[in-house]
Length: 192
Image 1 (cartoon, rainbow, N blue to C red):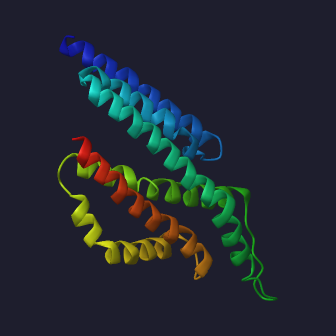
Image 2 (cartoon, rainbow, N blue to C red):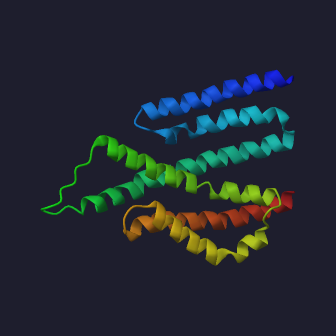
C-alpha cells in the first residue's frame, strides 16, 4: 500500500475517533462508553502490518482491555459512586446545605468511572511489558508489597474524601488485578 493511502486511512480513522469522543461529550460527558469505539479504529489501522500471531494476540488484548475497562466502570458506577455520594451528602449540616447540579453530578460520576476504567487496565500494561521482555514474572512477584502499597495509594488518591470503603473498593480489585497479571504473565513467558 502506498504511503499516501496509509496517511488517508489514518486520517479517516482519526475522524472516527474524534467523532466518537465529540458525540459522547455532547451527551453528558459519557466518554466512558466510547472506549471500544476509540480502541477499534486504532487497532484496525495497525492490523495490516501484523502477522497472524500478532493479530490473534492483539484481539485477545483488545477484548481483555474492553472487558477490564467496563468492569472498572461497573464497579465505580454500582458500588463506589453510591458510597461516595452518600458520604458527600453526609457532610450536610444546618449551616451547610449541599447544592449539586446535574452537570456536577454527571461530571463527578464520569470522572470516577474513567478513573476506575483506566486503573483496571493494569493487567494489559503488565502483560504487554512482560511480552516485550521489559519485566519478568519473577521480578513482578518480588514487588508484591510495593504493589499492595501502590494499590492503596492509588485508591486513596482517585476516590473522594476519607471514606475507607471507597479506597478499599479500588485498592482490593487493583491488587487482585496485579496478582492476576503475574499469573497471566507466567503463561505469556511460556508461550513466547
